[in-house]
Image 1: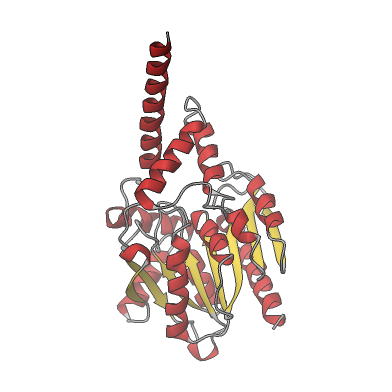
Image 2: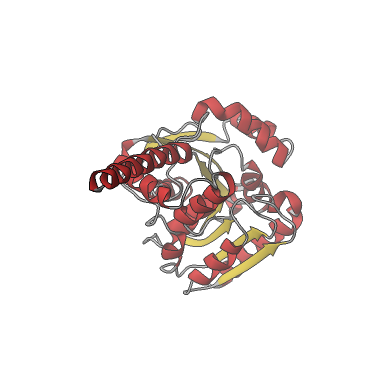
Length: 316
């Protein structure tokens, strides 16, 4: 009897380990990715704001928009583009725009254009590891990405020499921005805008499990987290926007569509409440799906971000 119990326990443990390995691979090693996925993301950029890639290609051809590469966290080479403000002599500051899961620097060109052409900001927009032209062995879900973003902060400041910098991210990029906000940062990093970011990697993966893999029990996430820690050095529980927000004392604008069912709308209040220090604003966007707030209300989106940044500037 005891032997049968032990064999059953061993079988269940093995099954959980295999399921955990599958879940870790599924979540952190999506395919296609990187340069193999560039063409899809060019189409996505134009679907979000028509003419975006023609705008990008035109500035690149003129030598105004440039590429740069640095050695990022864990010694992978990481790529970014940067472009000066429309009127460089009167630049209002620098924005770093951070893309989401499975995307790259091209997808959120609508934000790059907003900051450069309408707000007159310099802009740097990176490829996170495993995305676009950056190297990497997995999608870091914002947790280790924040360490690359902190390097990009220094690079952008070295290029543009501004004393006012804002970090703006969408989806996983929003989580990256929130995770970055809790770390020690230079004084010139003045504000953050997060759009539909998740509260933690565990919360997000558990939601994905319930939506797509209801037959998989929650404890498989524990196994997947162990696999991730053994492979890459971090686990799902520590990758928390909430814990980082609790340490953030600089202004932040939180944006989230109330029809978002991918990163559920209740993440907005969780994130907002977690930031207990410093100025904060919230915009619950009526009827907006995931990462759809700009597309649904482009003029209001721009106005709210602009007004928020002007309030932050007045706090100097």
